[in-house]
Length: 304
Image 1: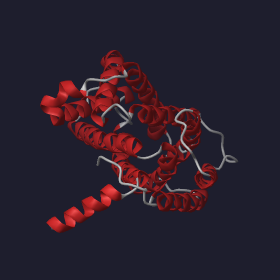
Image 2: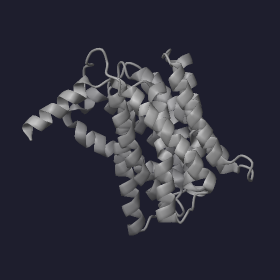
Image 3: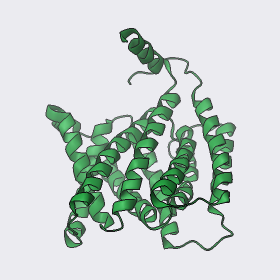
């Protein structure tokens, strides 16, 4: 077992940064699927701002407990303005995106949210100055074409929550870009701690005003989604610290498969034929991206 562990650790260290980022990314999506299902379930009775407040408090407590004596060091930042800006953008993304998740079918909310891929790829070029080759552009465009097939624009018009999902995607791209900008100087835990400070400060007053006392069963789901949300947030942040934003963005299409499964099994949401056709295209784009990211780097990069 020890030899196997060392072998796996060696393979992990020599893997390309984009491959390691892909592993973090896909792990975060699996964890988020549980969180989203729990949020859709409890969101029918508990205000979203209250859910986000409880989730953020638990997330911050977990990080503080893990940090221990190192907490003062983790609270040091060289870019406080960008940390606060990222926190506000994260809150906007959560409010818009989770509102859509609660009020419209999971598959539809997820499909619309994939417009974030365009925002991220464009921002990666314009803001982060990352180089995006033609194959990644093609994979992104093909994946978005699959999303459009699932969305079926020729059907009934989009409602306000569908538009909220698009807004959530836009702000989500801003979160991704800000994480990449902070990656050079800030630890993952520092980014999440400042996010907690900003979110709790902004949500404190409205949460107190609209507070609804959860039942014991609702508390269970709130704690569950908070813990899974914490793990997912760390994995996602780590993914974008390790890999390139434009390289990882197409992998987000995997969320659609998980959303369709969760919606069907737990909420009796039956995906349309267009969802299946589009999903096949999305899977192809995702598998291609993983293969592209798996190409070995010229030299091992430091850090886990």
